[in-house]
Image 1 (cartoon, rainbow over the protein chains, first blue to last red):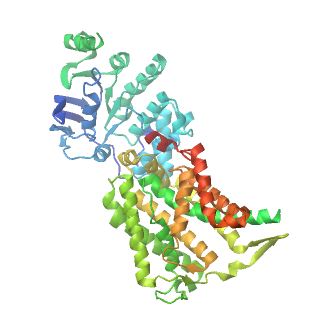
Image 2 (cartoon, rainbow over the protein chains, first blue to last red):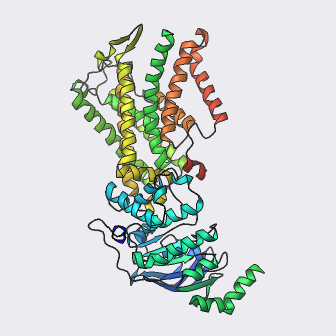
Length: 255
Length: 304
């Protein structure tokens, strides 16, 4: 099983980068500061949580880390290599994959084809691509929906297809943008198992954005907290739960 | 009854041409959001490619005299090259342009091709006799169907089957469908955008060639704007079929062919000159009841 997940066509190897680093990132939209001086480091063996109230800049930061947004200043470094000027496609080819909040599946295509497209785009044959896609779908527990049209899936399954698609061809890092949104507690439990297994199954670091604190505290090795575009805390889940700045940021928002 | 069946055969055959043309238009619209008004001129090029360049009224066949097994690939190659050149010179620099800009650019391509034909071949319509052997009728009881109609319908079905196989089975087909649904996302996942677009132009050229050859054998006349009315009906077909849906383009094409032929056959004689006005009234009615077409696509509805 694990072997099948790692079958790569000749000439394509799993990227070697051992860490994904943000160094003093600033992002400004027409004078408005969305991210101010944020630094973080994700490693290959961990699930790294990124949390914060709505509008804290989480998705903007993930956009910077995947080439969808150019930082106003600061840099993103992948395995020691400066990524300035890289397109999102280059990031994906160099082993940084992501999912999207909106899912963004190809809704008129089958679930298997959705996952297969990435394999084909990177040069696999139809047969190899299909095998690879099926192995991924089995891994996220959706093998029985492989031939369904993606547009007919419930939202929670769409999220799983998105994860399978992101993991095609063994990226070094995967960034998951709110994968648990709208899931029931049981579905969250399943998802937590899946996410927690990514680093050891794929040797792939995970950066997880999530509002569901149960999921975050359950799977993350380390957590980084943003508020208003700034870092307010970083540390182990147990430290974050007791952190005064974090508590007041969340209470401030809710109260 | 025989009369109606005769009309039905005419409708299927005309609908085939519209469906093929609509597929060519729909394919590019799906991937590029390009409403390609030059598609009609791709069709004209295919017909003119058969004859010797001259201003004579009677066309001298040149490639047209070759054996069909050589002639069809040669003409197809010429049209595909024209389609790829128009992509490379005009549409590629406009990759980030919006749909109206692309459409206006396609008008420009259309005029350039039409005037190119005028310069080389002259403005007068020409008579050309392609595959005259296909005039022979096939008798089915009292029904007389020209062999050409059977060939037209057969070729159309075969091309549709091939296109379907290509889109469903081959890696390029899967990538093209992905690009048609969400171009940016497909690119992000590793699909090479320019390659897939070039492929779509090439296929669109192949479909245009089929229309030119079939249409020319039917009419026997060449004119610098001969493809324009075909393309116009093809647009109508893609709109009522559902923009962005290839199945819709085919359904729309056959439906428009059916409407036009039936109006031609059953309208009172005095009103027949206004046939197209009646045909477009039907189109308006269809759009009133199904604004996003007969076969709406999920991808396109979401984005609007």
